[in-house]
Image 1: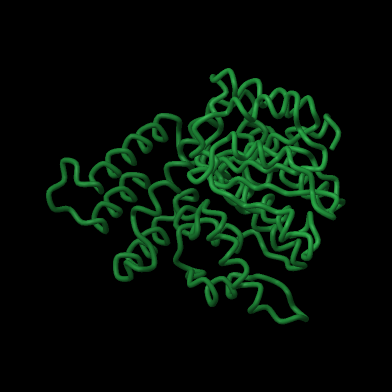
Image 2 (image 1 turned 90 degrees about the vertical axis):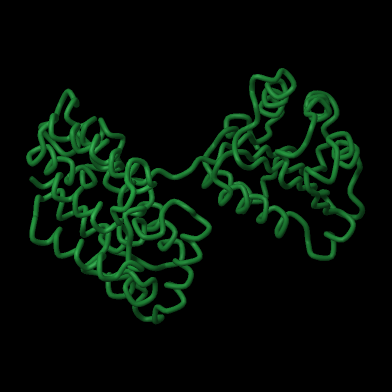
Length: 348
């Protein structure tokens, strides 16, 4: 892989892997395990032929090996194969990085594909050995990939892209319903999407709110997305309808799920109030780092319906309700009453 590809996106890495353009070292790190697993699993399944894997593929765990042992394995040559593959999972449990630093600088073997999977955060670049390791990997044409958690506003786009690869489509409302209900756990999210895909007929691979309601169990009328929509548009009747539904059907949703959804919206709305240009959807979308002007429509509506002062008060109230929902200064008020208190404050 050419040096200019270092640090590229997940999609770019996968394109190179599918074209059999392998790098000598992959350092996969970050908070989101989904992308790390996808890359390492693809290498494990496709770099070698099945008959080559027994002698040329090693999967180990950071708690069970030392860095020096891994480097010793990496210096070996493959047996009757083009490559040998070494995958180190849970590399955050490794104690030392100096052996990898020296291997990357001077001793890396072209026929070895070394994959280091460091989850639950990034390598500590403040350590000299780590800093030098990453520099050497980049200089030698290796891959340093940071797997970041998806932000709330990125989830609908991720859902649409995932289904598109499976030759299925989804409308924006359905994508928002799924994103709001499942959240940013991509392993769980893709598992639910796979379940939906199996249910689709071959002649109509389209995900609609009705499909989401049937397969994932999210009411198409009473869900977090509809609640947020009612609040954005100051639709008091609809918001109270949804709150009453959740009060009677606690399994359908809870305050713990809705508070982050509302907080994120009003936090972004507060930022939008200070945008230098609030005259167009595209300008607000750019200021909020949204994918397109379409995603800014709710914020344009919010700018009309909620002043900056009211928005700030709402954010403070959400924090108060969040604390109360966790038992702080709240001996006996239930989640349903707390949610009613918050919605009344927002809409009046």
